[in-house]
Image (tube, rainbow, N blue to C red; front, side, top):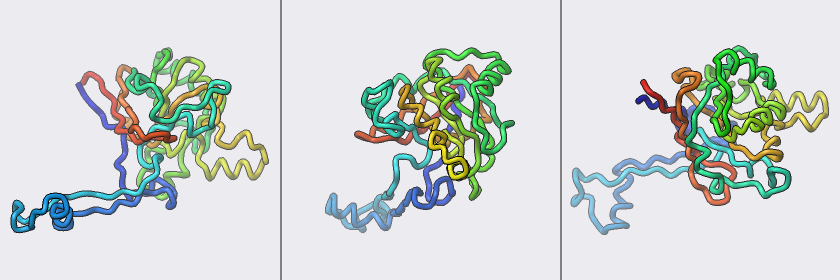
Length: 255
């Protein structure tokens, strides 16, 4: 059995978010943790092994930092035609341990809005028919931009039609190696400013108001997994009432 880590590290160094969304991590080494040991146990440094305390980190973070799962609540207050949208702690856990299929869409150019035809063409190429509750992962040009300043501006996007095409086949969890499920914000904003059409803004996310689904954003290492024949495990952190939860997503398959 092989397990491929599909998650990026959570750090405050690699620019994978706009500055205002980046996590802030305060690292405390073993000397810095001596006071914590004394506060908890009343033990002095000279009584500790090698005079060393504990190491710990304090993190200030959004639930959308790093590799994470978006809940239907993130997209809209309602789903499925008026039902209150689920928060991340309410989504069924069995959605997040399912067969996976990878769509290799790296041939599509930056800013491309994925169509149902694009999806079906790739499924035909790999010889796979989607099944209900499959987890669909999109491999895009964003994967090569990781670590660069333009990562958040690089990628393709799934709009309303493509998203509903997948959910219409019973898919309830999708994922992408890009910053977001829709086309990059900078491109989407320019389109909105040019056209004045509000329906094109965040249209993939907003499709969740029609059919509730979850999406994994900022995946990695999709080049290391096959097109299908693997299982995805991507359980989100249980944050009460939250719009998303971090995940250590992995692909599991026979080596």
